[in-house]
Image 1 (tube, helix red, strand yellow):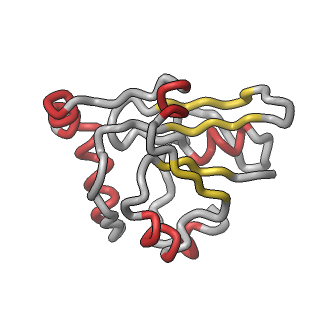
Image 2 (image 1 turned 45 degrees about the vertical axis):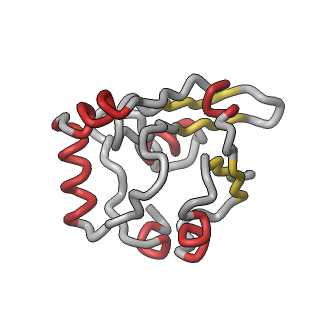
Length: 140
């Protein structure tokens, strides 16, 4: 299996790599062509600020803060991302596009799409793991 991450800027890349938060290939798409091709939304300043006031974002932010996850908020924070799982040959078997900040694919949905034991697409399995480092997340 090949794991690929596509970021949109170099800002924070060194810190991200040093923290070993991702075990895969990393690419930078400064022109955001892959983001555009996938239909990933970039919010304007006013719309982005309104999203930060929504309860879903505030709840996710609170959970992250309680878990000690601080993160780096520098850079283009108005671009949404997503999770895409593609089989060899190009068939997309899972796609999750962020609809707002803090909206992430759930680990159980990803495991279920990969047909890995423990994966469930049930509505009750929607929380992301509460981890503060790569080591703490391993095995989840």
